[in-house]
Length: 522
Image (cartoon, rainbow, N blue to C red):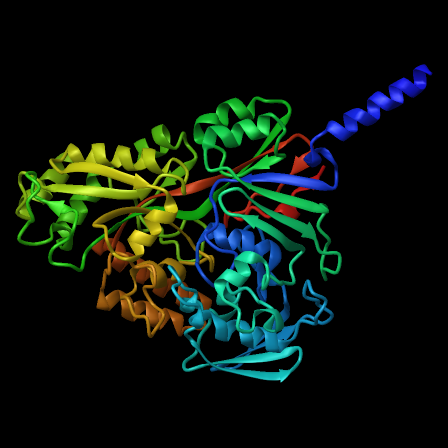
């Protein structure tokens, strides 16, 4: 009787235990919500991160950003204007249908047709002039000029099912109707602002997910995200708050994993309009001309920012000050470019030379739930700019509101982040600094509408240069031109930090991807 009672109590405890406690289930907390489950709708890291569980690209990347086979087993240029991709055989979509070259062609064709995209993927498909299906497992992509980055670009475009997505709208992906991929996990449900539920795809061609069921919890509040880990409500979290790093590193039941990211935090400036909406004199009256168009003013702003203080005090050491687009060790990094030295007097002198000895007023806009310490960073920058006579206020808002307004070019000075999807300097150069051209797919995220003909020419030359050594030199030169002109003001490269319950291991990724299927039991 005593044994039976103990057994009943034990079974009752199992029934009351949270679902994530079962070994086959895994829950982790994401720090940002997604705006859509459509993998072609919005080129945004949180979206791409979640899509990467359900969908796959032709080319994958390892934790350090090196290219590796994914849906394509191999790729090669067969002449100066043609890339051939040999596709993996035996791959199934989640609905059981076969993956073929027709799905690749359909996905590439779909990218430019997605309506109302806040930040489209066309910068990675515009170079393709023709698609030739050789056989069900071979496709050739034609370009108008030699294009060495085809494999890099094909690591950013997720392949959808032509059968499931034909005629599908973005809402059909959000509801799950068209959310049919080839990835290790299949889509179950999305509750916006709350969670994404996924299940293991047993027909996956590669290593199976160690988890039968995955719940991606959206917990944008830093304290709440940490509390959910400490209470074992989730088994892992991304973007560990910098203020908690020291404390969590001392907890015996937790593990931390960290790596320097290619996520650049920077200021984007309105350098195109003669009158900018949030730049005025100190009385709030419009100025006769936009001071941000003057490179001396931009240099003054850069010199006024104490990057090392941002790294040490605001980011708690989880970042590295920078004066360029890529961190050291990444393709296109230039040893010649150093962060601007903090120089208040030098900044004031530049303002006076530009005709603003008494400064002016500006508003810094930024998100308050997207990047690590984003609101605190904006507030710190505002204080620094105020020291050189620029009356600076901060207006922060949820990222969904912020990016919608930023994409409508409503702001003058913006705090933003950019992660290089291709792992080299061509990504931020094409997206952030190239002269905006919807037809060419350039400058798609150039919210300041910066334009520099010399930089554009160097970038175009680099994009047509197959030799890696020569291409990297051209990218370095293009970066130097843009940084000398301060088309954007680089601040620091963020450090990526994950925390897990003891016994759960993760290989930290430079691309910020938090892939549930890559967490494993030690």
